[in-house]
Image (cartoon, helix red, strand yellow):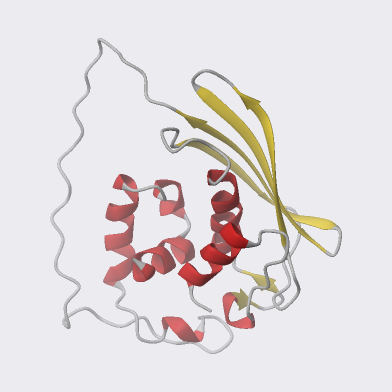
Length: 179
């Protein structure tokens, strides 16, 4: 199951998502993946004009692969400009990942700050080195990915809905590959 399929599973049936073993390192699913899946469940509960503004992620315990996980979202407050939510990944009756998030519409301001120009990057062509597969460390699906994919994902993530994931290398690589 690839990253896009996992996101779709969370959107369609958040009460019972099973993450395959290739998405784990040791006994736990990758933290970046768990954060991305909880975020996806949360994002589905807010208006499209309210992008994520902040997320606080707590990895309470290991999320075991191959065991169904329920993704629950509680709307704490839906104000005029900001929605506050609490997302949980629950497995075997225990919270494994907890995410508090704020989603808010933009605001008009007299202060104008122009952004920096994007950093020029090489194409992800055939000259990019491949990410090595390390048994027990790297998911088998990473075996043929260009390392530069993570850099492109960071640049894309800043402009897209997943900008929060830029610090989660695993989720960013998976997101960029699935686009």
